[in-house]
Image 1 (cartoon, rainbow, N blue to C red):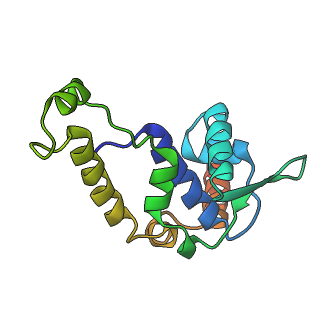
Image 2 (tube, rainbow, N blue to C red):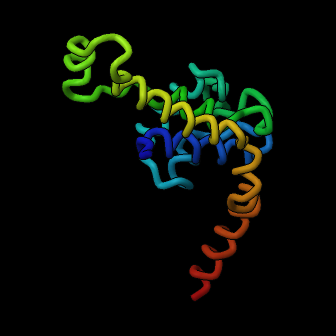
Length: 155
């Protein structure tokens, strides 16, 4: 099973928000930390906001943060919200119409069942699980980046 880049970026953005422990994060900072263009982060943040995973505050002092604790966000939920789960198999509808009822299951139904099985495994894991296995908190990353920058300036 292959997920889209958008879904991968969405999970990474959510992990970044989880590491912030409720603090507002600027889209520009997220984009820089994750190596994603600001435009893509804006688009994904909009989708995540509409799906109810994050909340956004506009304005100079605005940003984004998780709308609920990371332990309450299931990875399967995120994938369902971000992925188009309709699978079209070329010719499947034509074969389904021409076959007698009960002969062979529609190929799309088989793929839908497989996709649901895949996502049900993801439902067993939360954002908190991924965030705890991820990088150190944002504060320590910023401190490390500042120390590295200071070392380079001194050379």
